[in-house]
Amino acid sequence: MDWKTHYEQALTYTEFLQRYGTDEHRRRWQAVYDKVRVPADQREMLAGFPRQLYLLCLSGTWCGDCVRESPILQRIAEESPVIELRFLDRDANPEVRDALAINNGHRIPVVVFLSEDYAECARYGERTLATYRKIATERLGAACPTGIVPPGEDYMDEIVADWLREMERVQLMLRLSPRLRELHGD
Image (cartoon, rainbow, N blue to C red; front, side, top):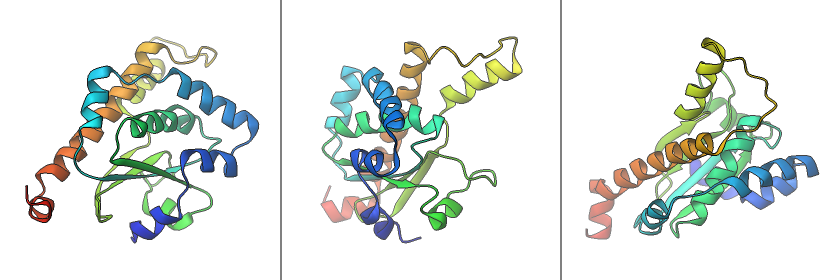
């Protein structure tokens, strides 16, 4: 897959919402964005990342999982001078959609982590571990989900932590890469 070309054609967070979202979609994404908090120690970590990291997120403005996850990604990207985030619409990009199928399904959001030269480093999505744990508790346990109450702060914090751990993991991969260490002389 030519990730560089797809990344260059992708849209920023705001452009993506403007092109593909309705006013209601934008309102929902904003409501989540306003709740996202990146802890101070994690902001410091993100600000200190030395390696360029491109995030390409396959998403949909209408998708509930994307409404929850994408604003988190935007907040995290804002905290680092080396993380750049772009979005592709799942339905407008069938080649990427098919390449990123999970469990034979076209699930979103899926993020492709790319190095400074657009080499694929990782894929992450469509739901974080915190979300799968919550869904499993609701569907497999005694709880009965109503869908009426939005995710609480603890749950949101857990999702943010899941994404932050993956960002750190990929950044350490890039930092320890013999290829990139040779390139940067470190």
